[in-house]
Length: 120
Image (cartoon, rainbow, N blue to C red; front, top):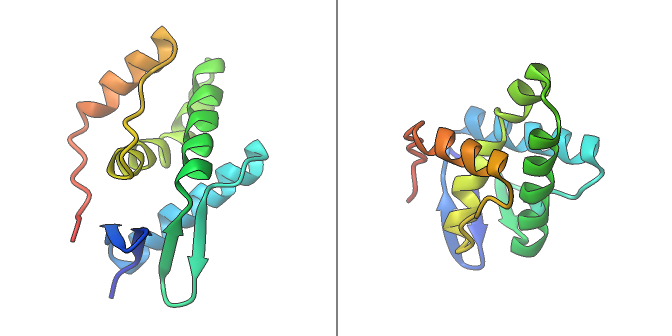
């Protein structure tokens, strides 16, 4: 069994159940803390539809918050959500371009992580 993260009629990520539950739960917690909807719309049966404009705003806000604070704990917490979110945003057809030098450095750092999110 796995979660499905869909944009329109296309599945862009299909993680196993626990990974999908971890990511979606952590993303919702980050969204709540930042006062921003995630754009992840839960559909019964381990399915999420992604509202791309809302998801893009969520990722931008999380990235801005991470780069605003030179706090290792903030960075560690957001690093559980941001790298995956950046890959998903790119799969939605919206590559994230760093707006500041700090954002560009972070993007270079996470691009070196070689995330292999299983796509169907």
